[in-house]
Image (cartoon, rainbow, N blue to C red; front, top):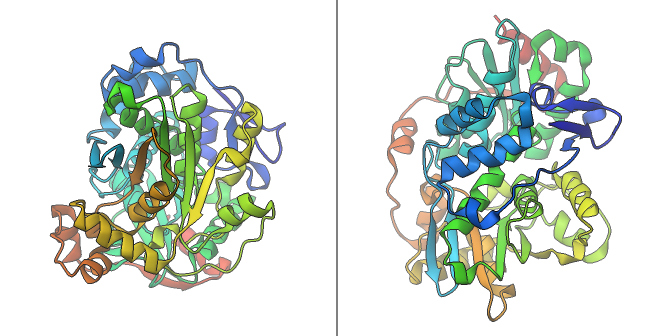
Length: 428
């Protein structure tokens, strides 16, 4: 598998190099030089989740890793299901919260950990640096916890993720180091990019990233789109519309890659909260990020999504117009209203899934089947969900366990020198 840097296409790397580096020169994202042929999609959809995912990912990786190795990696990473649930006639939820940290990031985080272990020099120093707006942190922390020779540093905006999200990954200790930054998620993301631009620091600590900028995480996410379609009645696969709650846009990128590989999807819908840079861009053609707005769907509080260049590249390669994407932005008040409507219909959701559901319902046409992504368990946003629905959401075991533990995070300003000091100190 060869990948090229979107900013400097002459930089071409193998899958292993892309996994180890995370980003290319000039903070460029890596993108596959060619997309594999998967053959008979209907036959592929008849396979079980792990076998199908192994075939998809082996096709991407090529002969760089043996198919048996990839199968072992997938088996270790995907030890939990991605079921669909019928919410109402012709509308289904893809539940991506059945993993150890109760969020969709478990799929990508765990496969990335397996990938890095497979391609890394066991004697080399590896420091994972990533920013999170909520769920990435937990998935990455638990995926890499206890792994030899790997240090993990996770940045998150102080006071801007839910308390239970914070507890789930800021209580582990060991090789997991968490930093509460006095700023926004975009500030955290900018610090990560600046660290990658510091060649000396990057070499000194063996810097790598576990955000969806890392191609291995993105590739893993392709697999649950196939899994969702495999569970739909065959009669409902022909006119499928998928609504994706979008923050950093890794999920939508993976979905579009799945479509490019042959998955039958009629169209995708971009669903955001008040941080609506992409919906405004799709409407006006002007890219005008604004200051990040805190919302009750905090994992989507991103005004400068990292993965958007990959989406534009893929659409250009496939000859797809950006005007083929549906889009919509939802306010907090509308989100709360939708959560109440869904609960009345018998489906308990959380803010991110509710946003995707609302925009889907607004745009779904007669004869179409709708699918929306539920990216996290409602209990991860217990305070918000309890207040809106006037209920007491039960805590699953992982949240109950970590909720009672002590926070171990450092607090730092939005300052690169402070981050650099943290990265150097965790090497001891």
